[in-house]
Image 1: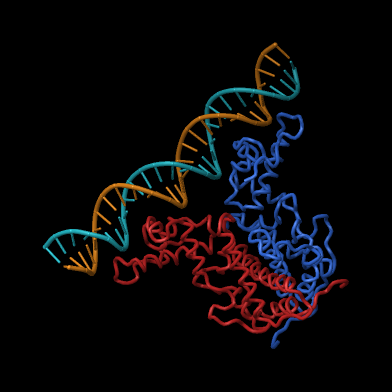
Image 2 (image 1 turned 90 degrees about the vertical axis):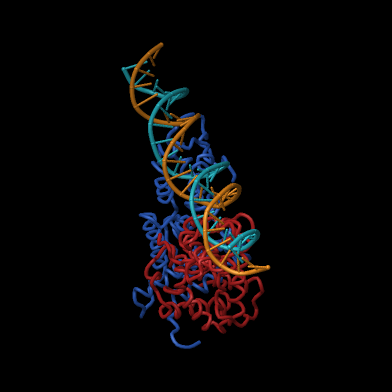
Length: 209
Length: 209
DNA sequence: CCGTGATGTCAACAAGTGATTACATGGGAC
DNA sequence: GTCCCATGTAATCACTTGTTGACATCACGG
C-alpha cells in the first residue's frame, strides 16, 4: 500500500505525544475505513504514521482500543456541520453529496464503511449498530412524520433509506460498479429524491400493481 | 463456531472424492457468506466438512481456488428458479422475499454478502463486479423501459435498486439493525414496491420539492 | 549540569495462517 | 490374492499478526 501518507514529523517537534497519537489515529482511521478491521495491520498503520508499532500499545492499549478511538472520531452522517437537512429534497441532496464519488477525500472512502466489516464479537457490534440506528434517527428527524403510519413502519422506512445509502457506499467503493461508481451528486440527487419521497412520504402499496 | 455442520461421511462410502469435494465446498460456501474471505480459515472449513485440511489443496488448489468455486456455486439473485419476475410488483415481491429474514436458511445469511468482504486484489474483484452488474441487469429486464431516459440513467436506476438490496442484506445480517433485521416479506414488500416504482417507473425530479 | 519521567526503539514471542511434503490406507483391476 | 493408484492423514514449514518487555534517548525542572 501507499506508505508515509501521514507523518508525525509535522513541525519541528521531535517528540510530541499529542501529534504522534493524532498521526496514529488518522492513519488508522483511513485504513479502517478503506480496509476494515481485519485487513488493517498495526504495522501498516504505524508505517503510515511514520511511527514505531509499539506506540500503538502505549497510546491506545491494543488494536481494539485503536479501533474504538477511530470509531469515536468518525463523522456523523447527514449533519457533519451540525445541522439536520429539512424535508425530503434536502435529505436527498445531503445523501447525494455525501454518498457520491469524491466525497470524503480525507478518508478515500465513505466513513460508513468503517461500521461494516467489523468482527461481530463483543461490544464492537453494539457500537456500529448504535451508530447506524443513529443514522436512521437522523433520517426520521429530517422529514415530517407520515400520518396513519405506526412507529415500527416509520423506523422500517427510515432504515430502508439507510440501507440505500449503505448499499451505495458499498457498491461505489468496494465493488466499483459503473456507472454508480463515478456518479456525482448531480446525477444521484434527482433519483434519490424519487426514492426518498416514495419511502418517506407516500402511503404504502398493499394490494396490486 | 459450530463445527461438524456438514460432514463428508453421509453415506456408507468411506472414500468418496465427489462427496468430500462437495462437503468441502458447502462448508466453505457457508463460511464465506457469513464471515467473508479473510475470516474464513481453511482449518475451520475442513473441520466443518469433517475432512483433513490438506484436501483443500487436492481438490481446489488453494484458498482462492476454493473461493472461486464457491462463488461459481452462488445462486443467481432474483431468478433462483430460472424465471425473471415481471413488473415492479413482482420484482418487489422477489426482492422482499429474498432479502427478508429467514431467507436462505441453507447459508445462514444472504448469498450476496459473499460478494462483499472480498480482497480487491486480482480477479476476485472482477468476478464480484460482474456478478453485481448481472444482478442489476436482471432488475432492468424485469421492468418495462422508461421512455425519455438514457441508458446510463437506466443503469444508474437499476443499480440503485441493487444498492437497496445490498444495503438491506448488510444491515440485516452484519449489523442486525431493528426492526429491519427481523422484518419479513409481508412488511417489506409494500415498502419495496414504493421505492421500486419510484426508481424504475417515475420520471426524475429535477428542480424543487 | 544532572536526574527523572516521558517518549520512542528494538528484538522477540506465541498464536494462527496457508501451503507443502512424506507417508499410510483403502478398494478395485487383473 | 496382489499390485497400484486414488484417497486421506499427519507433521511441518515459512510467514504474518498482535503483543510485550527491556532498553535507549530526549526534554525539562531542580
